[in-house]
Image 1 (tube, rainbow, N blue to C red):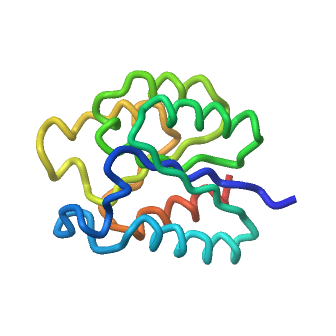
Image 2 (cartoon, rainbow, N blue to C red; image 1 turned 90 degrees about the horizontal axis):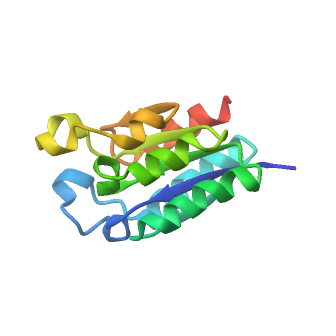
Length: 144
């Protein structure tokens, strides 16, 4: 049986490719999914890629990842990164390792983006490498 990596994406990430490409790049979420699926095949992994603009969906999917026996979760929580105690607590409540990922480097941006509730609970964080951030997170998850 192939191990599955959940790749969860938060608010506004459905607009990748058109939303502030100077910050987030020109790759769409579908482009990133394709890149991950190609690499996952090489690593004998499966990807379950999802996106929601609703915090509760992300919480439910984190719980589901553990219930379904996912190998790991790659989470780009978008703006919820900086505000969501609920996501922090959901990550802490599961044993499935979570890797925080960001396309841009939040620490080089506005002050309010410097605090990460997700990062406080995640196993690790990868940020600032554009779409490659996701692939780097997948490489790390494959080694768990």
